Every structure is written in structure tokens, then in C-alpha cells.
Amino acid sequence: MTIHKEGYTTIALSILFIFIINAFVDYKYADITWLKWLIYLFSLFLLITVLQFFRNPSRTFTSGENLVICPADGKVVVIEETEEGEYFKDKRLQVSIFMSPVNVHINRNPISGIVKFFKYHPGKYLAAWNPKSSTENERTTVVVEHKNGTPVLFRQIAGALARRIVWYVKEGDNVTQNKEFGFIKFGSRVDIFLPLGTKVNLELDQVVKGGITVLAELS
Image 1 (cartoon, rainbow, N blue to C red):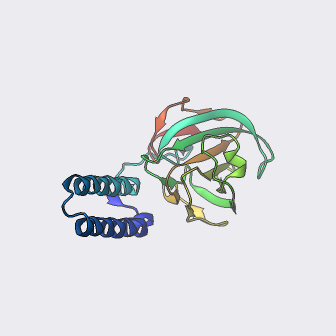
Image 2 (tube, rainbow, N blue to C red):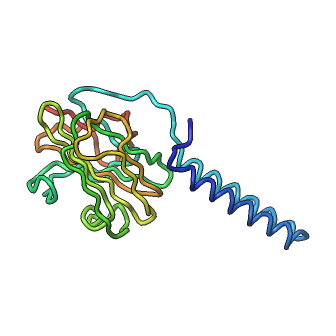
Image 3 (spheres, helix red, strand yellow):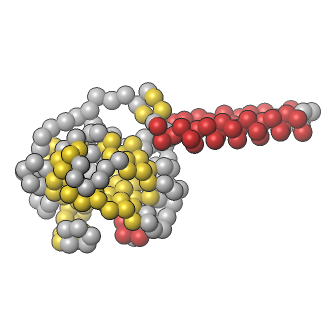
């Protein structure tokens, strides 16, 4: 397991904060043993929390020409037909994966193909499970066209804790299944929009892993 590049600055700042607060407590409250140990334990907890959030575990990825692979770790919170109003402007099959702060937050391309559309939207920071988060929160929208001509839309959505969405793709890019397309910091959600009738291999509340769990099969 390694640490993702998006975590370098946050980890460095966290270590600096821990050093300062521990040095202050050691200097100001040297005789209060219980307080020093409380701060030590808090510092350890903070460091472990930040490190685990930015972890990048080694994985053996699942791949397949007609497979749609889960783009993120988390839990399936939505499987339903819905109106997609930004790009398709018609009914699509939506699958949503909620990422808690303890999940790996790397986002991976669910299919290989050409990026036909990309847009970043600034917005609010409603809880990621709130239905309005799909249209009101800070988010990105990516549409990748499979070589068989099927377009798949996936959307990064910031949550109540997430304050930064990172993306690595742009229109015209030729992307590869399971390669990173982005990262969301501290709790979030990814929506995937598929053609109606697509065979979905997931169930509600199922725990999935990005790059490993098969989400659907394209016809």
C-alpha cells in the first residue's frame, strides 16, 4: 500500500499541526501528565485517520471489454431509472456509490473509451446521500463513449465534508478502464448513468470496491 499523491500536502500540514500542538503542551503543561497523554492519543488518532484516508492499496483489477467496473469504493445507495438532465436529457439507469470518510477515495474509469464531454460545476456541500446533491453540490460530469458507441456518464459529487474534487481528464482524452480519473477528499459520492435495459450486477446496500467489483454489462 502507498499514499496517494493528493494526500502529500494534507499529511505534511497535519504533521506540522501535530508537532506544534505537542510542543506547546509539553512546554506549557509539562506537569499535567493526563493532558499530555490525551494530546498524544489525539495526535496519533489524527495521523492514522489522515493516512488511511489517502491510502492507495495494491489491487488486482477486474477488466472486460463490455464490463462496467465500479469507479469507487463504497456502498450502493441508488439503483433506479431517472431523468438525466445535463447531457442525455432523457431517462437513464442511475447507480450511485456513497463513499464514507473511511473508504479509499480514488476514482477510476469504469470503461475504456473517448471522453466526449466534461464539465465542472461549483456548488453546495449538501450531505452526499441527499438526492439534491446530484444537481446542487460541487461536482464534475464525465461522459465516456465506449468503442461500441455506448456513452456512459459518471459524476463526482462532493459531500458535506468533501471540499475539493480533483480530476485528471478532459474532452478528447482516450481513457483506459480502471485508470484514475479523479479523487474526492473527505466523503462523497459517484453517480453512474447507463442506458435503460443495461444489466446491473449490484444490489442496494452492497459494498463495492473501485476497479474490482463489476457494476454492469454493456450489450
